[in-house]
Image 1 (cartoon, protein in one colour):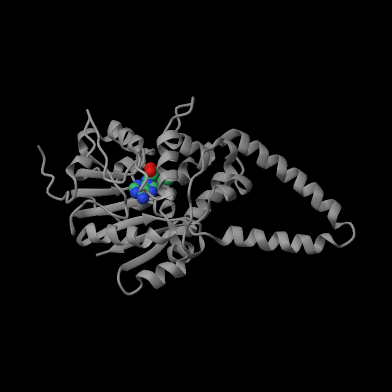
Image 2 (image 1 turned 60 degrees about the vertical axis):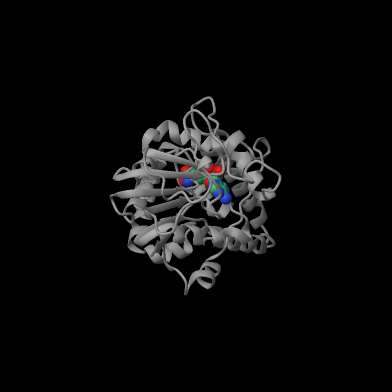
Length: 322
Ligand SMILES: C[S@@+](CC[C@H](N)C(=O)[O-])C[C@H]1O[C@@H](n2cnc3c(N)ncnc32)[C@H](O)[C@@H]1O
């Protein structure tokens, strides 16, 4: 059997093909309600597939129109740029079902990918894709049952902002603690606010002011009618409505919090992963070659101004160096 020396806490929490057990607190009432909500969302809904074979989490949160294929592919691959290409142990903290093929590739040059998640359903899906390359641990990213200085690389994508607000610091510290010295970990996070939502709010306020001028209100109503139709069409195609979904806890911190909390303790760099989100793409990116062109420009800007768009865009890459 392969070495499990890095597992410091309850080896029974490993999820093997024929059986699984849980860490203390997993599934029992001592788990915080926010975590129960997240685990139940992913166990019972997010990592279930809908009739078209797509995870419900993906259908709910991703703009899946083909016009975005290249942008999605290139931004997923952007993560690999910061990770060493090979090593022994790769940590995937909050691996989920490993829903994208590019995400599967991150650990290609590693002997083992250690997949950690609260959701057993996530780990079963991950195991179906990774097989023996993976080791599967039901655990909480804020309290990893793993030894210090172990991993040659770590990724935690779209996980920390689902961790209770006051435990996110522990999540980052656990990633840092388990990274080997001289190695790199990458977090994909979501800022609570970004340039497009900021601009929209200001535009709406300006329009409300202008709306009081004679003749403008009529024009505004026409615009709202047109854009409202466009939104409805996009929504029908790609997502379940909020009412059909179980609740999911989500509460991100802002940049200032990261700077103040980790500034002196952890070597951290913020770069752009994706500067735009689904709200932007569904409203602004038409489903044609002009849409593809706009996304290519956005991608290029993210490469040219990684720090600026890491700060001002929707999804930053937070790079930890130990
Ligand atoms: C949005 S999914 C992201 C999955 C994957 N990393 C990706 O990028 O596709 C979030 C995953 O994090 C897991 N998760 C959330 N909070 C967690 C925690 N405190 N400890 C471990 N896993 C957690 C959820 O169960 C879910 O599978």
